[in-house]
Image (cartoon, rainbow, N blue to C red):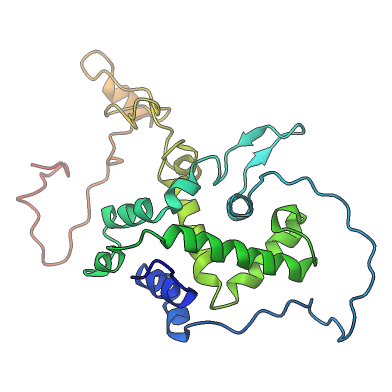
Length: 266
């Protein structure tokens, strides 16, 4: 792989990771028209200067991440609820980290890793092309304005436009995947897991999701030697991890040598 990766080669690599293979086959999309939709031909129309927008971040890529998975902030700008930037999506986006996560989850096809043996310039070229695309998309919404300085509604419109362009969409999709991997992967917080229904970590700093079962439904571990277990069960305040339901066997599969009659592993 050459040190100077072009868009076509980056699209091929992104396609190998599963991002918009159709775009890889196309090679590139239609050129983006810098004029707003419906703009007449001829000299630009003089417009009133737009209101000043103070960007949350000094970087267009971090701004994009916040558009995809935004944080919630208080009146003074303090973070009330973390978003993609605060949970480390920028670190996940680095190719080494991203490929390692995909490999750990069994999401890479055999042979894909061979494509990335020489990828020293991937992160640099990916960022350069993405930031350039964001500049073009921002110019469509408001000529002369940086993406990070657009109002949020125009940032969202720019991202939607980019997702409809087969030459830009794979770049945005990779960023989106990195955002959600960071958020749901509990790299810096368990907030993402809580949002999809998992209980909070018992000790996130110590890396302990849960120290054991059975537990009450509020999360307290039950001392089965000294507590009235039957009373807890009758009060429907009992979580034995399997939710007290026997697993359904696959038709024709004999699992009696794996699970006992209570559904526990032998």
